[in-house]
Amino acid sequence: MLYEALEWNRRRTRLILALFVFLVAGAGAAVGYLAGDTWAGLGLALVFAAVYLPLTYATASRQVLALAGAVEASPEEYPELHHVVEELALAARIPKPRVYVVPDEAPNAFAVGIRPEEGAVAFTTGLLKLLNREELEGVAAHEISHLKNGDARLMTLAIALVGVIVLLADIGRQLLWWGGLEDERGRVRRREGDGRGGAEALFLLLAVLFLVLAPLAAQLTQLALSRNREFYADASAVDLTRNPQGLIRALAKLKEHAATVRRANAATAGMYFVRPFADGGGLETLFSTHPPIEERIRRLEAM
Image (cartoon, rainbow, N blue to C red; front, side, top):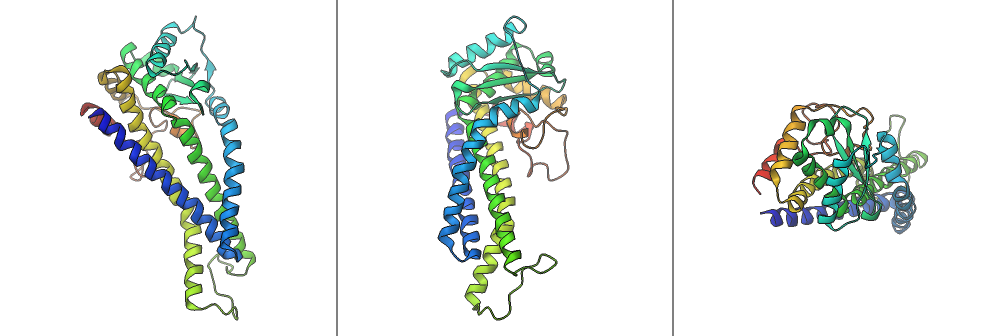
C-alpha cells in the first residue's frame, strides 16, 4: 500500500507539472497573438522563465528562513532534536540538514533547500514542547522526506512559474489597453474598421479569456501541487521510520492545538508541516496549501 501511494503521487505530480507547462506556453502564445506574432510570445515566455527561475532558486531558502525568524539550533542546546534529524538523514541517505528553531508557540515545522546538500529543517518552539520523541521523529521524517524528494525545489519552481504567468498576463492586459481593445471599464471591444473576421475575433476572445483565467488556474495548480506533496511526504516519512503511529499522533495533536504561526505568510505557507493559519471559510479546501489533517491521518492509517 505504501509504495502504491508513493507511485500514485509521482504520477499526479507529473500531470500537475505538465499543466504548468501548458499554462506558461498558453500565456506566452496569447500575448504573442495579441502583439501579432504568436511565436514571439512563446519566445518571450521562455526568456522570462529562463531569467526568473534562477533568481528565485538562488534566494528562496534564505528568504524563507529569514521571513520565519528561524535561528540555527546548537547541538548543545537541542541535543535530542539533532540526534533525531541525524538518524533520519542517515536513513534517507542524504547529508544532515542544518537545524533551526523558530521562536513561536504555534506548533509547526518546515524544510527548505533546493538540493539535499543545502537543506535545512526548522521547528517551532511550540512543536518541540508539544510532541514526544516518537511524534517528533514522525514530523522530522516528513520534513526530511521533502528534502529527499526535492519538494522544496519543486515548490520553488511552481512559485516562479506562477510569477511568470502573472507577468505574461499583465503584459497581455497592457497590449489590450494600448491597442485600443479595451474600453474605459476594462471590457474587451472590437476596433472599428480593423477587418477582423469571425474566426479571428474568436481567437482574440480565446486569447483574452486565457490571459484572464491563467493566473487563477496557475495559483490553483500550485496549491494542488502543494497538497499532493504533503501526501507524498507523509508516505515517504513512513518509509523512513517504519512507524506511521508517531506521525498520526503528531497530526492529531496539531489538529487540536492549531494556531497561526506569527511570521507565516501566503508565500511561505506551503513550506510548513501543517497549514500555518487559523481555519478559514467554506473555500478553504480549494485555496489551502495543505490537505485536511483528517484526510492525511486516514491515508496513513490505511498504509
